[in-house]
Image (cartoon, rainbow, N blue to C red):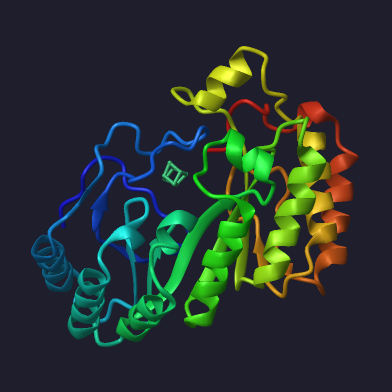
Length: 290
Ligand code: SF4
């Protein structure tokens, strides 16, 4: 396989075969994101992707059962291209159980419901979608390229097509100013969707991003560990979606995992114990965790 630059994948895909289908991100404007700043976006030719799949089969044998196709927003590829890649993947790896990729709201919304159904039929199991927030003001400030209504429309299409949805929320991205609105609106959007998975990350300003500049200039109120924990609590309190919630990332202060709603009491108990600890015992808000 040929890999270009740093290859990112969700922690839940740690054991998956990674085949880069796209390089970089076609949006690349989110104010907090430093992942693909050094890459010019392009879609790799399908024949190249298929060649990498053959190399993987020669190396690992035919029993690979999960594959993830980085980089950012591989869902942007033409539906016929994705179908061809997914079918070829299943042909080379007959025991394939899960095919996944990243897809942001605006790129999912470029596909019709019928196209998403075709992708499901071809083998697409799950889309990892960073919605970050359900608060329109926050979404606009971070240049996410989608508002809450678009997030809901995209999510509903994915769910209707029978593709699993893994939605990511960025704790603290609204700053002190929008912490309550961000928590409540994010839960409200997810309540409309009932995604299979909700995954939490906590915002850390990354050098080279607009949000870092805002924070360094004193224009953004970065949440302290306790404030981030309280935001997490408020978010979970308002979350009614029948989802599995995971904090499967080192940036988080609280590892709250489980099913909503039945595991909420354990989550709250974890958060309250952490809130009893001094702020200094957590990683500094502006660093660490990654
Ligand atoms: S869409 Fe995703 S990968 Fe692209 S800039 Fe935004 S957060 Fe980064």
